[in-house]
Image (cartoon, rainbow over all chains, first blue to last red; front, side, top):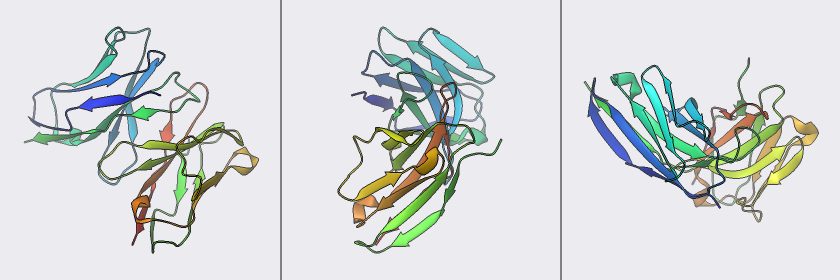
Length: 113
Length: 112
């Protein structure tokens, strides 16, 4: 079955700097890669996603890149702000809908003022 | 649109007791998922329903966990008897064929 590895497990950056979180996956049939943000005690919330026919996607300060050949994808947050502090999870599945997500272990991101 | 609803939000029980969680998905979402999230880890799928049929329950500990989705809408997840290692947040999510998964607020279970 699918296995998703996520690194680093913790990340601390200065406010205004960039943060990068990386994930690798094992199932070459995976085609959909969402990223979720989970604040303490709250539900995971989708922040950005990418499909395998696209190499990069950007939404304001957040971007995701995908290298299907190498089976890895990354989340980039630029101009970080204190409210970006949270746990971020990457995930993979074979399709966008009606398919289970396999999650990475999570990255705790701390933005230092 | 209303989100995924779950209840209760918190539950504390003794080991060997039983517990049940309830989930109401987003209206029109045919697929419903139950995930277990142990502290410090990513969510792990327990069971996936498509309407009222089970699609994937390969990681559900069937000797103690059960789930149903009668009428293809609401769902309940039951643990009987509970063990200490069942302490976790139980997340319900729903999706349609054209959308990603949306999560409920979760039920935090503590087994003493």
